[in-house]
Length: 108
Length: 125
Image (cartoon, rainbow over all chains, first blue to last red; front, side, top):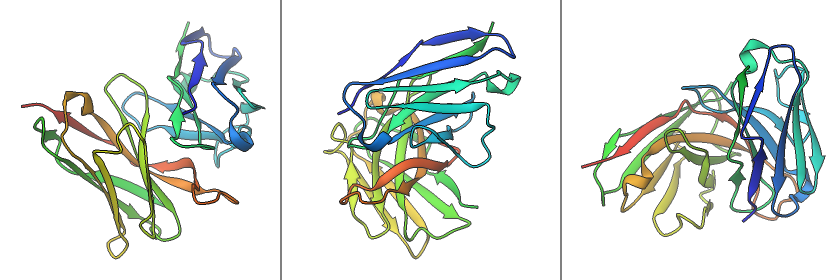
């Protein structure tokens, strides 16, 4: 199975700052089949990005994804108060589908 | 738009069977892939498996011996059965739709969207 390792575990930033989250795969992800989700306390995950760089419907353009092969990045250009949450990457190019362990973006 | 809602017992005894149902509203269950995903309290996400509306399934090897996912297209529902549960199976269980991938050769469930709100299942005597 493909193991996804996210870093850092926690990112402490202030509103307005830029966030850069990393997701590294143990082997190449087929066809950039990688997604990013945001999860807030008590809520289900919400799709942000699919295909490594395509924003889901209704997702603000301050969220962007990039990468291919084994290295992927989620960037949030200017953090808004509602962006402080946990973010997960997930690959869907091979079975079993796997998730990273998550990066928590907290208010500094 | 499509919405999903999980239902089922919130408490299951060790060694017994966990059974959950996901009801799809706002759209047809036909033509899509449907997954179960779980999250132990305070931990990360684990994909359990998916079913196509035709009934074909794909499971996580880590749970293969204990899991069954089924679909009832007449009720727009799909279900999860997990046998011989232990306290390690305590988690929030989510159902979600998987986007259909092109040119996939049979393993065609893509990203998950939308998700149900989740239901907490506690395994305890």
